[in-house]
Image (cartoon, rainbow, N blue to C red):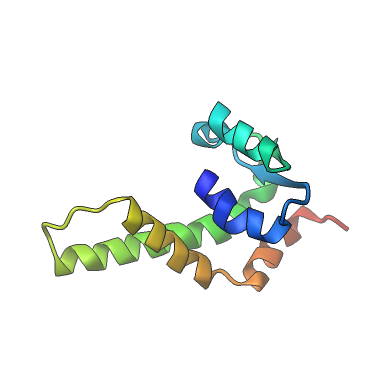
Length: 116
């Protein structure tokens, strides 16, 4: 999460306060993550588990990230069956997946929530 904040949130906010809604994953809510967020003017909002109103966001965005990771890892394993995967590989998969997710996908993922 700290890497995500540093690479994706902080360059955009440039020190300005912001809020970020994230799921209820234990890894996202450690004291270290909460302190890092607070020290960088990021207010975290916990999205309750099983909140169906944002399921489209989870499916469209996280689904693309997971699908990209699975495809890339499968291809790399075919090319090098004995290869071990490490954190830099996961970050590369995340970067490639994130680049596939356009503005339109993010906006359309929020549309079922009817914020009008």
